[in-house]
Image (cartoon, rainbow over all chains, first blue to last red; front, side, top):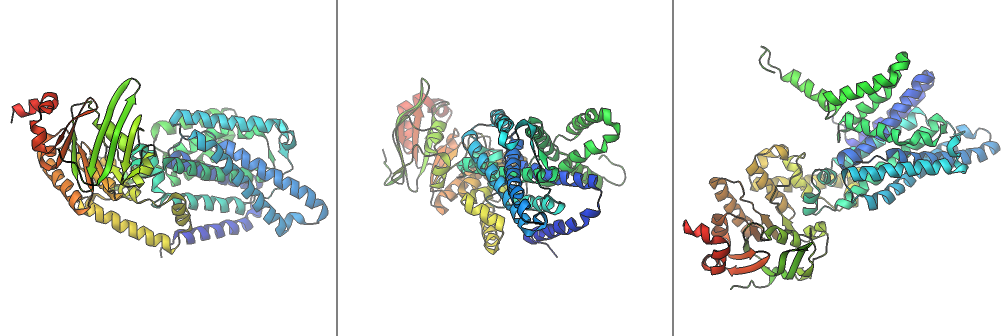
Length: 327
Length: 262
């Protein structure tokens, strides 16, 4: 039986919630990595809508993540600090669930609004110029947060309730993948790809390119904000340094390595690039050198994306003639 | 001189300047509702600039552009396209990483927010709309014998097929005026003959006015009802192919050499 996209989403959400009941048995370290993988998938898939599908090179994704993280964490620490004192067992009540959902959504929406404010004027720029503007935006967010004493300033914000469980993170992973795929695989969603391929031709068939680019930015920023909120509630501590330029680059690398506009590839790249530093932990001293070296090798061997390359190799194997003719 | 009755498009004293260069100067141009008008002129005469002026890529420095009686100068290109003017490009502009099918499908895009909400919700009406658009795309591809290539990436098509797909994509926006910028460029005689048949077909079947720019005199003289000749951004002649052919200024500026060989 063929599973429709909506039933697929429902199944994935159920699996995420179901998985949540199994996770207490898992090793805390392993669970932590699983959650990091999930957060990075959300970030990479949402950036892929902007960079990969709509073709707008953004280097500010960590900035949107920071907006979401600080908004959600600020709200939930405020609420839980005030309510925890009054109600015994608030941590585990369904009120906490509602509070977390609202805090996450508030973070996502504020990030989306920021995405609109940054995107509307700057999406007239292309390529390198847009990259520089978004890079500047990310730095502004980081520096602003460093100077907001009420949000912890450079010391960071701690004491965030640990609400981001496996179910929450992978529930959102399912939602972001569904959203991006559902949008792109539709007549209006093909507009994103049309804008990426040729803006002038897109306008000539009546596509409002600015509207499309800003929408991609806003939707991408929303999910980056959600990822930020989830990140904050799993680490229980956030600081502006965690949302710097390097974090944006990390997400961009996932998108490029996965293959621009290839959601499955980008998910794979997010998993691989999150696990790689952990796998390399035994060779602690050379870890980051090896990590960077692997990145360079991957880029050289499959510049169009990890998944694309793997897929083609598999196809090549299947198509290879039996009697050893030319491949 | 023939003046079209109730013109669908009228350029009134339009001027386009690039810095100190006047690319188009005080141009008056009218296209009738079902007319096939040819626009010719030597290289750099301003033909493509006229296209860019009509489609909103460049606003006129002076003058007015009216489409079905309403002024359209100053509107952005996508808004002009939505009002019923479609075009092709001299240097082919396709969505190269999309399939032939999707290139045409992009022309059927619904209003963005409505379209995205429906795509996200994936209700019954989304699938109904999707099926309706698919049927229309297949139909228009079939008319131009591109249906067999529907799954091919546009970037992988042969040159002639790319030109054809660009015309099909323009037609899919259901234009009332179609602007073709050198559609015959690089085509062999057989392809040219087919192209001429198609342009006639588009005009008759789709009730579309066509403005055709080309260097190929065989194509222009063969199918255009009326021809406007530009030189250095100025209209130097206008009339039926026979009239233009005999016009002394045209012969002087442009056609002279061609006709020596005839």
